[in-house]
Length: 118
Image 1 (cartoon, rainbow, N blue to C red):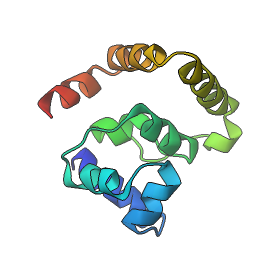
Image 2 (cartoon, one colour):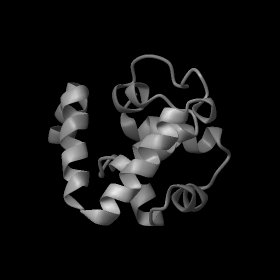
Image 3 (cartoon, rainbow, N blue to C red):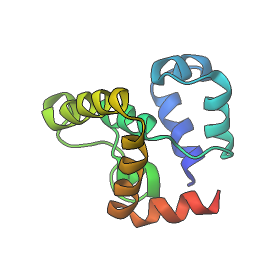
């Protein structure tokens, strides 16, 4: 199952239309459609948003492991702290977004390979 299938599976699991999902994660309808078509790689904020509502990033990116995080993200204050820090840093300097992507690619080599295929 490809990323596009996993993002669609999550949307359906949440009982949302593409437009509702786009609104929930703060992207345009067209961007959501591109995620589900497989023509657009996920942006870091999408991955963070999905982690915050309980989805395992490793599963989302690679398809390996469990779909859901344990413990639930609302019980994991680290995810919320990361989200707050990232928003603050991006507001100060957009270069931090690029740094974060590089660090993410180092931590998850399969993510980098997957992005290069796109």
